[in-house]
Amino acid sequence: MMTNLFSVFDPSSSLSMPMNWVSALIFILVVIPTFWVTPTKAATGLNAMSEKLHYEFKTLLGNTSFQGSTLPFIALFMFILINNFMGLFPYIFTASSHMILTLTLSLPLWLTFMMFGWINQTKHMFAHLVPQSTPGALMPFMVLIESISNVIRPLTLAVRLMANMVAGHLLMTLLGNQTASASGIILAGLLATQIMLLTLESAVAVIQSYVFAVLSTLYASEVTSH
Image (tube, rainbow, N blue to C red):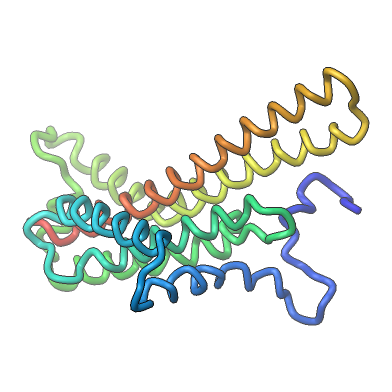
């Protein structure tokens, strides 16, 4: 029985180990069939999606892209996408609705980009702190603003993904609680609304995965391009 509205996001379980976090590893079941001799339709679709993402991420990286440079971002997209979709099924824990997962994905990426940029391209990183045509009097403020925006990037990436997944699940939970006591036309309206909301959540699952991967690619291109 739910004690509060956020109980659906409770990572605890009745077993000695938090087995609901295992849902974050379900993507392995999707990746393995892609290596079969005779690929399935699902594997063919994943390969086509990967090729589309490869060309787009390669364009975003620009001249700094090399063979295999888009693979981490494609894998990131697939991992988040599968976790988002798994959370739409009943009794499956939504791992991407917790900061412990989203921040674990965004923070190492951001630290890697920053370390690479400041160690190998220090002048280029300093130049990024002051946009072109900035008046001399505003330069100190622009450096402060740009520094803050760079520091909060992993937090904004993590919060964006987590907040969007939590918001949709909360709406579905609220509507689901009302269907137990509804009847007649109200019940039919609630069911139709839930179906539309589920469709919207499916689109949000794809969009948020894409946004997370694209922003990570753009952050990498800012560090490597000069």
